[in-house]
Image 1 (cartoon, rainbow, N blue to C red):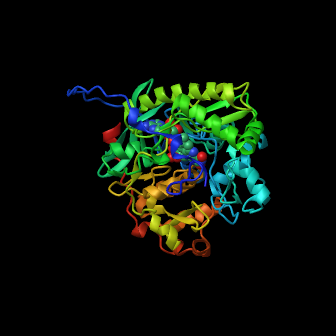
Image 2: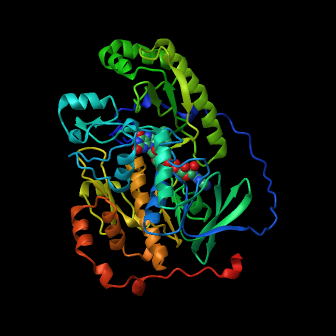
Image 3: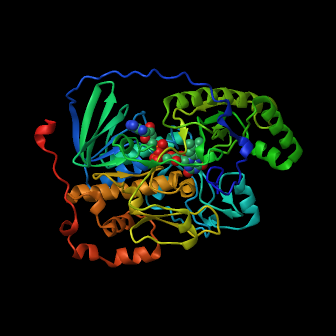
Length: 504
Ligand SMILES: Cc1cc2nc3c(=O)[nH]c(=O)nc-3n(C[C@H](O)[C@H](O)[C@H](O)COP(=O)(O)OP(=O)(O)OC[C@H]3O[C@@H](n4cnc5c(N)ncnc54)[C@H](O)[C@@H]3O)c2cc1C
């Protein structure tokens, strides 16, 4: 369990480190007016097999995976880089990929990416220590993002710039066409199927037509604009609901800070109280991939909506004020921070939760106890605590109800709020993106709707690409191939071609 991944088990993050929205600024009422926009002809920028919207962990993974299957892939991203929150949002703590026995169950794309990062860009325990219950090893890593419940786990911190570079390189290797500085604003929906998306850029408004779309915006922007309903419930007092702009402080000595925190209980308490008195809200740093850089994945602000532009703006203002207050307080009073400076406020706001898909299947809390393995499993997630088994993730959690031609991956897949506590983490987003990319390419290549794709085909390809599946699923998928015996097209709904006249 990480400082983030703790829904319902409140571990290393204290409620006092969540800053409630009670002081939220009063809102000016919005005028009850509308303007009528002129109807327009929107030029088509490109046609493609697979359109991925959003270049975070899920989108990057999806685009690479689809490209590996030979699909023509376009990726549209509103910022200037790939990686999403773990790069632009400074969420550089990649949560647990090894289960409580030490087996890496989130493998596939997650492993491909982490194995290719330069050695000095990753900080985490050696493979031989994953699953170790050795007290000294766990005590060391518990202060460094990688031991929970006395077990050392594979949950490293990474250099965000190295992850940006590698994500881009891996996408380009698969000939993914990257379109940065492009904000997707509207899905193109016809006959109940998503056929592409309209995006805005400095060039204005343009359309991309696609055989299959993958919404990896984190907030299900395209699916929401297509009129779908979502689940949005989450406990407003929980970290899950918090939004913030993270920051990194440079010029520090984290080893010294950890010695202080673990060796001088009273001094540490006094320091935290001093911070709370000064700022009301005060939080502790996490380690990063370097000893001289401290990571703050806060200030955690509760009570705001991630899809309300005024809330997002207010979070930026408050985050900046609290960021500066933290830097000053730490520099003045914290051992190891004497030469600290504000290195970077995240360019990308940190949203943990906004909308959750209503999908063909849903991962729910009851499943954790049952240990259910879905027949259409596309991956296995680590669980929140050793008392729970690994969690089987079904393909149906990526398949929206009520619309064809589109898949969802990343932090808005279909699950309940408890399961969202871990399905939103970076490795799980690589995992669902990996499956969505494979499914989209298989659908586009075969000319069938993603919903009707045989999951065994996805499983077979996932295994080829190094993913881990539950042993029972792997046995069926590997032994073959009922899927191959029953030609897909016989039972599948074909993708109807978009009438050319409409678009040219
Ligand atoms: C403060 C914080 C701390 C966290 N801590 C951890 C942790 O310790 N460990 C962990 O593993 N996970 C952690 N998480 C969770 C994790 O970072 C995210 O849930 C995960 O990155 C989500 O991945 P994603 O691909 O779904 O979305 P994102 O990472 O949000 O990426 C979405 C991408 O889509 C782009 N985009 C969005 N809308 C549009 C649009 N309309 N048009 C074009 N582009 C668009 C965005 O710019 C972004 O690049 C944390 C999250 C936060 C906010």
